[in-house]
Length: 122
Image (cartoon, rainbow, N blue to C red; front, top):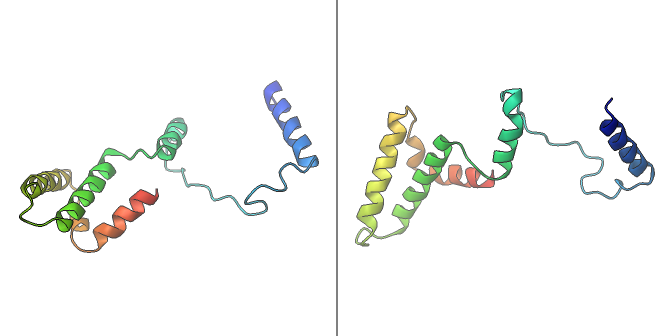
């Protein structure tokens, strides 16, 4: 064991003996760890950092943007001056997703709202 590892381990054991971990929230409950086994070892730290900061991969960000535009289109009147511009952006983004080989079925129906809520939770 490295010197730093030994030092840290000693401090952790001292804190355990003194009961400093007893009143922590979640004490005695199993940890809920993300399954990152599909991520290469060299990229796991960067992936976790980006995930914890709320960054999304480009394809998921485009999906999220498309859902938000779709929701906006449904919430404004067709006579609104910005409706045509937003509609064009929406159609362009939908074409980009389809050209990338992604299904755009999520933009139609209530699935879009549920997907947007799920993305926002993460």
